[in-house]
Amino acid sequence: MTTASQDRREAPLVLDTQPPRTLGFTDQAAFWLNLGVSLIGFSGAAVALNPTGDAPLPIAGALLAVVLGTVVGAVMVAGPGAIGARTGAPAMAMLRGLFGTRFSYLPTVANIVQCIGWGVFELTVIALGVKALTDDKVPHAIAIIAAGALSTAMAIWPLKSVRWLRKYVSVAVAIAMVYFTVQLLRQPIPEQTGTSWTGFWPSVDATLAVSISFVPLAADYTRHSRSARTAAGATVVGYSVAQTWCYLLGIIAILQAGGDVDKIFDTFLGVTAGWLFFAVLVLRETDQSFANIYSTAMSIQNLTPRIDRRFLAAGIGVLVTALALPVRDFDSYANFLYLIGSVFVPLSAVLIVDYFFGRGRTRWNLDQSSPARPLMLLPWVAGFVIYQLFNPGYIGWWANFWIKVQDRLGVHPGWWSSASLFSFLLAAAITAVIVVIERRSDTTARLSTTPSDAA
Image (cartoon, rainbow, N blue to C red; front, side):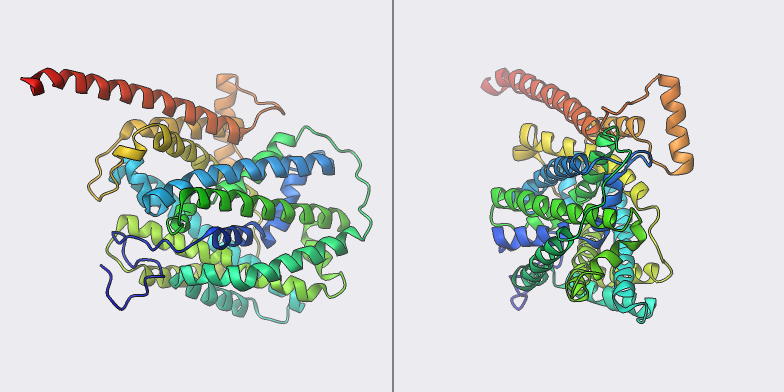
């Protein structure tokens, strides 16, 4: 319940309170622009440039893969975002309508794990940025604790933070990005040798995986949008422009660093006054950790709807900060992204199809007592399986298991295969079949009850 003194321009404290609709297009576009620019994105450009570890893509191929993966991923994020704007429900509570309350706990737990993991990664990369910026003069623990405290404070006042990002941070970030673009393009880009287009679709998948990781977070913020169209448009425009730009700079910086990803920050700091603009990017990285802390709190509210989100955000912030203290690198970053994508790419497809073409608009039940819809788990699981068959990733035992399944089924994807797109399309197709079956079943039920009603 809300109180008269509660700021109605801030997010509700508990799950069953209607959210204020205060975010316009510029608020949300700026928010997604900030999320699309990331220090991790600069380093992640290495995966887009050479996703297979064999022959790298030519610059044109890498850029095309980045644009395609980013835009398609942003559209996948915009779908659930628009649904959040229509329903006013947070991302995981929204899944009650799709799966039923109890089955919605499955993706909720997965999202809690991945958001905490992302939060730890983000605090780690902030600390690495501070290390590069100060020549390792600021202790790692101090950087982690300071970033964690700021991220937690932002998560406690999320809508104020979004407006603050729009008013101040977005302008500074845009100036920094323009400055680095000009400075890096003034330097010669080393000529590539031994390039190949065979890694194009894996590059698309790697880029898309970064975008799709926001699917289970989007509605936590778009539920405060003034309209679904505004939410979707701001998501696609803001995120697509920012991530494409970020990856382009990352690719150039990596090439200028001789392909050494560990020296990518040195490339940015090596330009005139680079430290000043790099400091802006390090500071704004807190919006990533803020988003993950806040969305973890919102996901937990799907499990325990009456707990004040401020207490949840504070507790999660402390936990993420504590977990980040001993971490010094993120070598398993790409593997983590692939695993996230395999879970949430098909989930996005099931959600979009069922809401816009199935029961979503008129018959979804988002209450605590929402009945189970186990049949909707089928396309989600099928999409997950097809993703693993096409791209089992590189986590030892997990990849070995799926490679054995590939051999047994005779499925050996080639350069043309995209795990993300095939997973999405299969999940969407199976969901569409279920939607048709449910429509016919509903029609038959209505027809069968008509004579008795008339009597």
